[in-house]
Image (cartoon, rainbow, N blue to C red; front, side):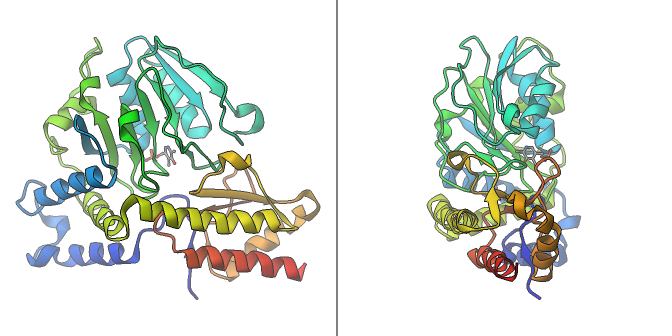
Length: 355
Ligand SMILES: *Cc1c(COP(=O)(O)O)cnc(C)c1O
């Protein structure tokens, strides 16, 4: 039976990207060697990093003055690297969920990290709108897509201080005005590559202003100056990321990706809104296109386990909601075809007819 992969992360990648990655493990570009056994400094690999950086810049139309670097440690290491490198005394954070909270917690180790607003009062089902960004903060940190709760900030906001964004789960899902941001980071395993590589897009003139000493590996300048090759980078995940970037380019770039993501999200949210049984969990205007969360209405609550089983029997994978929300979460990342969303909607409709 065909599987429909709604996993939240690590998650679906384009089939052809997986096939090309598999081929490179057997024989990298006809060299008679596996990508797993070549030097990262080899003539073979430098062009891969160069192409990945160039495609990132091209697809997101990244302006001059920004560097794209690939690191290890996941988005979680960025929770500490950002304040390490950018926060002298004070930073501001928008608390929109679990990941935002974790970022805030790390920042508190470095100085006065203030929470400007939080939607914790309503289990993070909306994005706070009325808040002031302190102008004496060194930066303002947001999480553009809240993977667990299914909310998303899609406006590239104006900020009086450098804007730092965790875009782990919505990077490359829409055009972004990178000039509005000082730094964008994310783990690649949601929308780009297998786990193991982290991307950072950083405005170079923000670096070098804090007075604390920074360990070499945690200093962005090390990686900017060495083109992500200061130490051995995650070779295979970077290669796969490069292939995914090529795939995005060949499929209409960011405009194409955004159109497909809107079509998929509309299809599923419409089905949820029309349903007698299911209901969305977040405020309509803040709904994520990437992670679509829904539960059963109170009068049908006891059918949740039955639907879970029914959907699994019909090939749906990874639709169980995160334990802090419950119900269901369908992650509809770039590589998920609309056919999978249609299959899920059919499944929901059929289940409803039967009960
Ligand atoms: C998954 C996720 C993270 C954590 O990423 P790691 O690479 O596992 O550290 C952080 N932020 C967001 C928004 C995420 O979705």
